[in-house]
Image 1 (cartoon, each protein chain N blue to C red):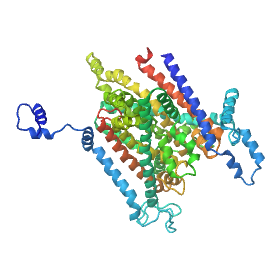
Image 2 (image 1 turned 135 degrees about the vertical axis):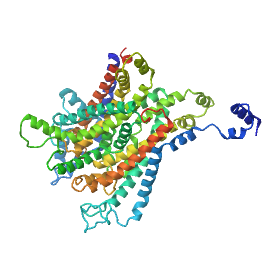
Image 3 (image 1 turned 30 degrees about the vertical axis):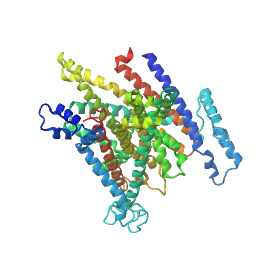
Image 4 (image 1 turned 120 degrees about the vertical axis):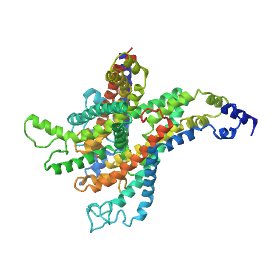
Length: 327
Length: 311
C-alpha cells in the first residue's frame, strides 16, 4: 500500500512539474512584459528595457525553452523563482501571501467537507423529509450561484445587518483591520471576524456539492445487506449507521474531495479578490494584468504543489478508510 | 395481421384470443420514449424547462419591448433606484440597468449555449477515440487529460486570457469549451472500452466498417444520454465560467457586455446601490438554476439509480 501511494505520488509529482513548465511556456508566449515599459512616459531607451528584461530573465528575444531551462536551473540550484516586475523576490511574496490564502482555503475546505458530509448523511437517513428537501433545493441554489456572487451578496447582507444593529458588527474588507492595536486576543478576534464572510461563502459552495454526493453514496450504503447484518447482530441503529454506514460511505468521498479541490481553489481565489485579501489569488491575477511572467510561474507552481498535496492526502485517506487497498 | 404477430400476441396475452388488438398496440417502449415518460413525470424538469423557455424569450424579445436604450445616458436620473421609467434603476452615468441586463443575458446565454455542447462534442470525440483505439493513442490522450486536470481550469483560462484579449467573444467561447471536456472524456472513454467488445461493434468491425463510422453509428449513440446530460450541465458550467472570468476582467471586455462585466461594474457600489448588483445577479442565478434543474431531471430520467442526484 505504501508502494501504491508512493507510485501515485510520483505520478502526480511528474504531472505537476510538467503542468508548471507548460504554464511557464504559455505565460511567456501570451504575456508581453516589454509593452509596459514602452508605454511609459518618458519612454526608457531600448537598451534600458532590454537590460531590465534580461535581469528578470523574461527577454522575449531569448528562445522560450532557454528561458524555461534557466528558470528551472535557478529554482533547483538557488531555490529562487526570480523577481517580480516590482523587483521583489517571488519566493518572498509567496511566503508572505500564502498564509492568508491557506487560512481561508484550509478553514473553508475542512468545514465545508464536514458540513457537507453531515448534511448528506442526514439527508439520506431522513430521505424525503422536509429537512432533506430544504437541503436538496438549497444545494441546487448554491450550485447555480457563482462563488463571487455569493461573496458580494454576503457583503450586502452584512452591511444591512450592521446598519440594523447600529454598529460595525461584521467587518469584511481585507484580512485584518489596519492599525488596530490591542492584546493578541483582540487581534485574533479581528482576523476571525474578517475571515467570517469569505469562509461562509467557501463552506457553502463546498458543502453544496459534498452533501449531494454524500447523500447518494449513503443511500446506496443504507440499502446494503451489511447494515441489516449489523442491526440483526444487535447493534443499535445509530451505531450501525455510523460504524458501518458512514465509514463505508466516506470511501468514495475521499476521491471526490481530491477531484473537487480545484473548484475550491478557484473559488477561494475569487473570494480573496472580492474581499480584498492580499493573498495568492490577488498575486496571481495581478501578475497576469502586469504581464509578470515570473510571478505567474511562481503562483502556478504554488497551486500545483497544493493540488499535489491534496491528491496525495486523498489517496492516503482512501487507503486509511478502505482496508482492501492496504493489503 | 400476420401470423407471427398473432402468435406473439397470443404468447403475451395467454390463452384468450380476444384482446389481441389491445396487446398489439403495446409495443415495448423504446429507450428514448422511456426517458421522456420519466422526464414528463418529473416536476423539476417542467419547472426548469418552462423557466428557461421564458428566460430565452425574455432575452430575445425583451429589448424590443423596452423603450430605453442600453447605452444612452439619462442625465436626469443618474444613480437612481428602480422606477417606472428605469425598471432596474440606473448606474452613476444614467445608463439603464434593465436594458443592460438583457443585453448581458443575451451574450452570456449565447456563450453558454455554444460552449457547453462544444465541450461535450470534444469530450465525445476524444473519449471515444481513446477508448476505441486503445494502445499508445489511449495512453497519450489519458495523459493529456490528467495533465489538463492538474491546474484549475479557471487559472489556465486566466493565464491564457492575454491571447484572446484582442479577439472577439467567439474565441473566448472556444477557449471555454477547450478546457471543460476532460472529465466527460474520461467517462466516455471508460464506456467505450466496455462497448468495443460487444458483438454488434465486433460485427461492424469485422465487416470492414471504418472506425469513424463505427464511433458515430455504434459507440456515440450508446453514450448519447450521458452526453445530453453533460451538454446541459455544461451550459451551466460555461455561463458560470464566463461570468467569473468577465467579472475579474479576463473574459468579455468592453464594448461587449455580459452578465459578468455588468456584475463587475455593479460590485463597487453593491453595498450603497444594491440594484446595480442584485438585479443582474438575480437574472444570472435564475438562469443557471433553471438549466441545472433540467440537467438534474435528465440525469434522473436516464438513470434512476444514478449516483449524484438520486431522490
